[in-house]
Length: 294
Image (cartoon, rainbow, N blue to C red):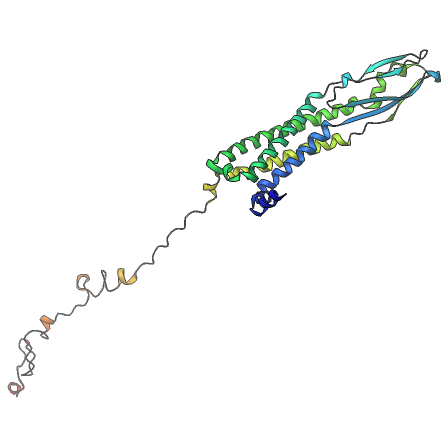
């Protein structure tokens, strides 16, 4: 008990809270129910034969059968209505193949689920190392999904045949004394098949569990990871620099290279040869002093 408490404290059982581990627990439990309800079944039905001579009658003819449903080996004794003699009769059919196949798949699914749970709890990091564990788990899960489909369908058909072969209304037709005048043959009670019906239900529920678990095991392989990543964010393109492209720089409309306005102080006389002391403007044909103008 101390070991379990320590494992819980260390978070070893947290994998059971996620779908991968939780579904595996359900697979383990449902596999037990599937093969146990089928493999441990035993049933019986009762008939009666009333002869014209009441002393030859038998009102309690019990027929017992069980897993693996080799009904051709099941027999019963019925009166012949002729001087107290009896005759032996056998049921019809052998349905052991579908029943044993179903139980075998259930047992192996139970063993694998238990082994996988142990690995999840005690060696989950080792399980994910080099991605080998998830790949093997994925392959086995796919195989068991297919096996549950085949075995459940086969056993459902086999169970239908078992019900037909053990129907007292049909079995009494095998008794020859029932054809005699004055003889009355009928059933007393039918076999109880609820356990076998449950086994078929658990078979298909296991199919759903194993099929659904494929996705969660597949995600552990990492194969889907590259496809689930978000595309890298594209860098925002800078807005066009109106000043750099159309302003005062390369495409300055006022620059001399583009035919804009550029004052030429050398030609206007403001920089070269200006004689401010004499008040002149130093332009061709212009007066040089106020005294000359006078």
